[in-house]
Image (tube, rainbow, N blue to C red; front, side, top):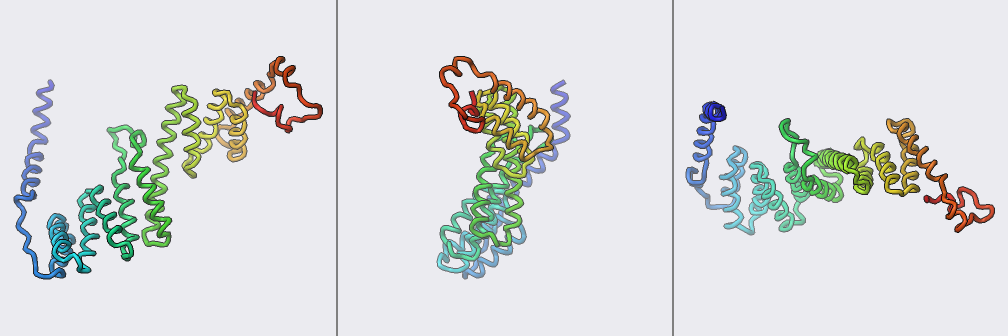
Length: 296
């Protein structure tokens, strides 16, 4: 049966794979026509820009590299630095593109295109963030290092160039990245909750609270209060419940929060007799005086 399926799949995909192989070989470096360089930096630069516009990125790269190497002090060499990065980006070579944009900024820190290069660095890392596929687990279950890197670069860009023309696009991308991190934190918070790792629940809940507008804030506060109660940190649990009631007075977790509050109240009232004798309450001290209000 496996052999039959193999031959069926090969008969369907074989011609396409063969055609793809021919195309890839034909576009390889040994099959490309030799680039005819011109005498001046400007002529070669124009040829490179035309190749870039025609989406012949490999030819464009050759022209721009030639301008950089043969005419290093020309203004066209400076522009070639940036367009080389654009060529890598257009070819989906995002690590190479980010490195090239960073090199451009280091070599030309006062250039008018520095904001553009900064934005493209962030965008290069953003393009490497895994996407959701129907046959794969959700993308937020994977390593989020690219998301973290993108957020850092976007915040750097927006802090330096808040009025740049790419700022709205950067802001929208930043919100999407924070949403992805919030989804990852929610996933790991629930994973820790199911596994009984309550300290991990608290850590992830606190992290979730830093991503405003994620939609998980109410659940994070309840999970935090619940986990702190399990850890025996009753005062911190009550504080979390108080914040939950203040921020979400009619939220979806109010019934569960009330039950938890009742349970915490009953625990609070059960003070051991030995502790009462060892630490008598000073005369006149009230509930707000601090000592009796502390967790057991």
